[in-house]
Image 1 (tube, rainbow, N blue to C red):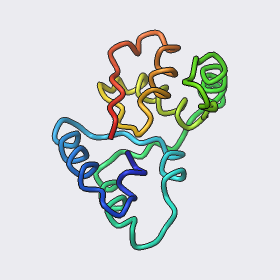
Image 2: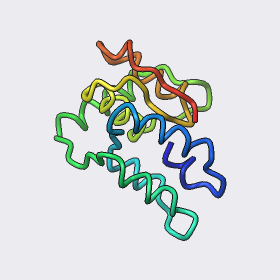
Image 3: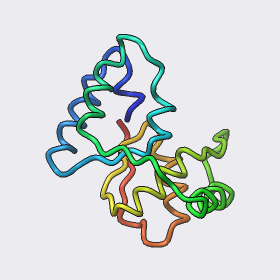
Length: 127
């Protein structure tokens, strides 16, 4: 979602962001911000959208271990490499009881969610 907001034409992502924001406070793990942020004027939409989000920055060693185990077990789509940031997104979605994960990679997020008991109701949504 953040990568889509950082693109030159983020119209679709902005519409999703407004819709999600009307339903509750979007939660963003801080490493996702680092993954999407490259600076420059094209990130104005991303910077504005982040003001409407809760950026979660502190994770314990145990949570990072859980992410490592999670990405080791996930059955990812062909040619997809394990991604600790995506694993962290899935774990955070479970922890905050999210209904939706807005992502450009719903298949990857789904593979991680499938490894987390209790995450069956979280829907990865392509943006």
